[in-house]
Image (cartoon, rainbow, N blue to C red; front, side):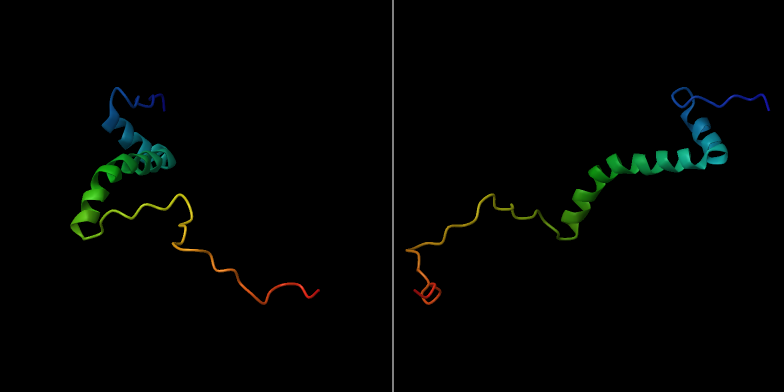
Amino acid sequence: MASTSPRFFQQPLRYLHWASIEKPAIFYSLILGSLGPVAMLVVPPLRQRFGDGRRERIPGTYPIPPGPRKIPEGFDDPS
């Protein structure tokens, strides 16, 4: 066979057809790779529509309890 493989940027649909037959790993990697940017646009509105809102922010520090600190007793070394 003297046919050359089509170039992706010149004929993308012909390239995908060729890659699906000749190189299925490349074809499926292109399909899965293109789903990432699409998911970034589609998933957040779907989550809000189903009632799953934004999460609370993760605290950056440990919360300091109000009031004076209670000193525990009974855990000292015997002297």
